[in-house]
Length: 464
View: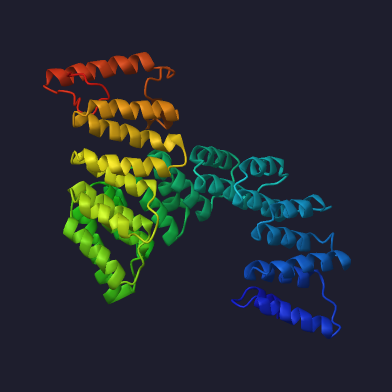
């Protein structure tokens, strides 16, 4: 009964049955305590779990490998990785499950140095060990490290499961590693009997992020089962490619499909995708209608991201005053993305007066000078276009006083499986001479073809 309730939606009943068990003079064993600790994890019963730890030690189960592993899981899930480490270090015998539990604890709290140390010290690693490290890296933006670990996993000939493939595909999407993404797609088709919806979604997201929109859409149409996430991924994919009409057509298909067939409903992320499509395509009225239906029809409360999409849509289309009023009526404190969207609209429509007000609010609320750099440069560009050179000088002086430096632009490209990173002015690449020589040739050819550089946003009065 304790075991059954430990895996149910009422895990606290396990503790109640344990109390009755003790009152009836029945002696709990290691399995009893293991299931009780699982119940504490599932139910978030911190105090009860800590009391069980004391009982376990008092009853002589401190050397039971199963009980100790469940203690580690309990402390990991309750945010006490230091206590989990204490239990682990005190164990006289450990299993790969014990190692995995501690590893998961460090990954969960974001301590990747400790996680790597545990991973390297593991006497035996299984698919869970590799998946924990790779997933943790991918989810915390360490995508290069995730792909490096995946390469090691393959060389170790560990069987790949769908969980690790999903994690690697998310890293491929972030880095634009189409070659590895295609290999995973081939592997799934050759080795996996049936891919999960989650794996299909990850493949679709990878293709969309790499700009292969046709392949992403082909996967979407072939999926026998689609979820809200599936629809959202493909709508966002079309929106990011500038195919606003196609994205909104899919959004309408989703709504009609949800009402009439599968019961799928849009969520907050779906509406972000639809509003992004409106923004990139300039569909202001459609954006207003979708934003309204989100509130009144679907009963979804807009979050700051939805307001950001609307501010971006209105600002791009030139409705700067409406965008400003929307910001003032938000139930949230505007963040830098909100003000930045309005400032971007001011640049497009050359509204230097509003830009000055927005920039002052923006810079005053930013936590770091690194964040302020891009916005101050943008404001300076707006002043430059308006010919307000004294204001340009004032902004530049403010940047100097704040110690602000514009972060250099950078980009990367993958060629034959190798990712090449480029930073403005960087000469460290082994082929930098050839790269710059080719760039000069392209620039000269562009000049011959009639191209004239846009100097409206430089920071000096080159025409004065």
